[in-house]
Length: 268
Image 1 (cartoon, rainbow, N blue to C red):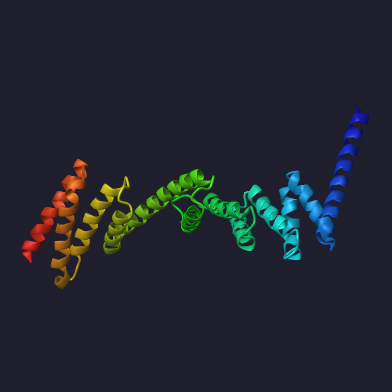
Image 2 (cartoon, helix red, strand yellow):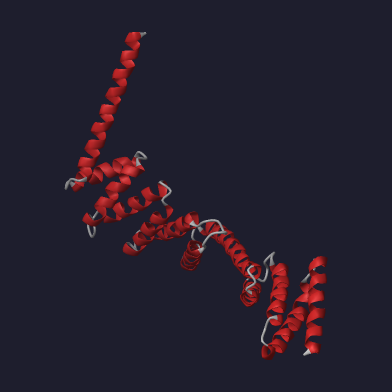
């Protein structure tokens, strides 16, 4: 048993030694000027799934091979290694750069699709900032316009639908947030914008209701010389939206607002 224990210890230290030697060899190669050896090693790592090491080598090779025969291969593989490691934002940048540098490449279409797709993958939940989602939407829409018959179009449409819904939820939450913090003018304008922008939204009825609430509260708090105009706007909004509000509780509340608005106008 003791002998077996020592055999295992020796094997462990041997493995550690080999790993250290391998790492030292990799770092030495990375810092060398032998670019042909770097390229060959990068391709070996890439083809065997060693994307982390391949990515560092491809990044190192990018400047050296610019304008040379292997430049396209290096740029494409570098973007792919980042994507394989789920470094989506960095991958998006490299895919877009590839398509710009090699517009006549057989991978140019794929590069632009992957740029948009990586931004779609990197975009956060709708509760967070949606700048990246908007970038992805713009890129997918541009892709669809340029390659309307691409094999990727089913996925493009699926991703766009998903992101449109995410942006819709975000815009509604922003508009409702203004109402919650009693910024009634901003809430009114944001709800109006939401209704115009998303005519088929499942939040449309709720947005109409909040616009009436915000409009009424904004009008009530207005200066005397502005009050009549703004109360009349609430009456106009009620006439426009009341037939579309189906929820009984919301409709009753909206009618109450209308009655109060009429009374306030009569008192002026």
